[in-house]
Image (cartoon, rainbow, N blue to C red; front, side, top):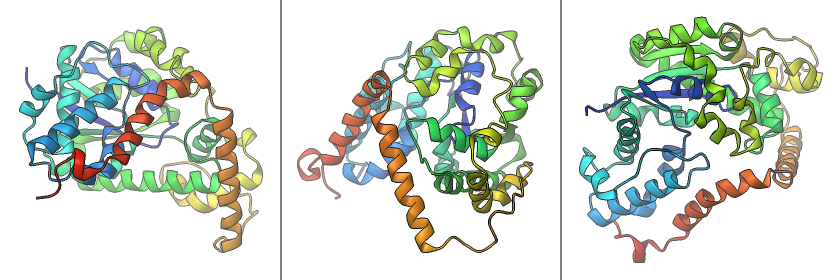
Length: 345
């Protein structure tokens, strides 16, 4: 089978990416497994493996990537990973190639023409993805950052103070906007989460046209799928994917954030909000001067406190499902590189 075409969803988490993933996964031409965040997790660890041109080192990387996928909280069905086969299929000894082959194998197991990676933070690795020659198509899924803040405040993962969420959201959106400037129009599509909620058929038709795929009504039954059920039971932060489209799931910040929180978010990310077509509340609570060192220190302390509370109240079943991946990554970080991996030659 020919190499499947790669699709990367980019943006910021808590923007409806799991819903979109599950919708598109309903199409026979597409496989869209839950992401184990291969690039995000392994790029910072690459130094541990040493020179990847040395076969033992590259095998260790391939083996660890496979283990990460194999203990994903939402299982990858229909596919098994033969480490030597993956090595043989890699065009070069790089993390990007391992990433590609793993997703290609998933696509082949389902006779799919496309695979989707929903690890939205991969926009940070767009330069590496582009240099690899993958010729990915990018779907930039964006949501009002103030609603993203509401969602992160309730989630197990991520920042918890609106100051930090605003900075992260703005940084991610800017990276996506910059990427759009530097690649062909035929490989980049912007999708508003709000439009997806309110005009799902129109937006899905536009997405399918971008991918040269026929839209089928099965996409709207995504919440009945096995993949949706598996995702929903893997953690409370994904439970909405087992429900139909929540058409009222926008502008929640107006009732869930305080006026001061809205003002802080808009001070940090107002320009990007406007660039993406959102209207500011213009509360006028804050002037244009930057936050002081003491104010930022207070935000940091509050962010830390809220993260601790989130950890204590985390769904134990969901935490248990993620535990294997966490233990694997900790084990890799603790390795004595001289003993377990051949050093740089």
